[in-house]
Length: 138
Image 1 (cartoon, helix red, strand yellow):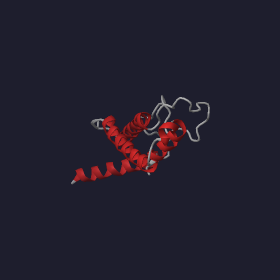
Image 2: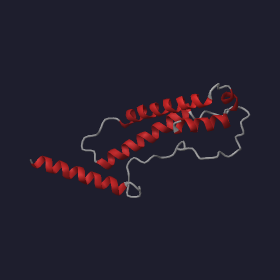
Image 3: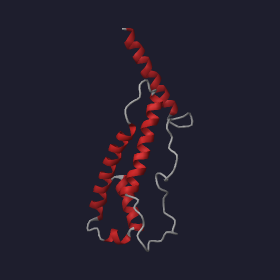
Image 4: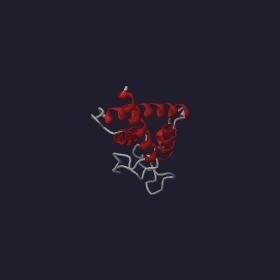
């Protein structure tokens, strides 16, 4: 089962118990839901990325793509996975795990030096630029 399916199953079992209990085959239902959610997130992320700006650096592109992916995930999960609780679900009970993205959380637009992947991305960009320079010399 995709991670999104497991996330949905956990959320629904806790916050939508009536709806959850009416699902004839929860394993199949949540596996399929997880796959659908993943496809929707992929599609929306591509849409949110938009066209590649002219002369965008590699780091800017990675940041733009990561930000679009996080925003797409936030939107789709809210619409398909983290549905509002049913009446009678205990809103005071603390969830077992925090959500992957918090609503209203500012998303990074670029990867910065504080990001653990920054050095690796910087090295990849330098190698790509060197390859382009070598290719233009011939």
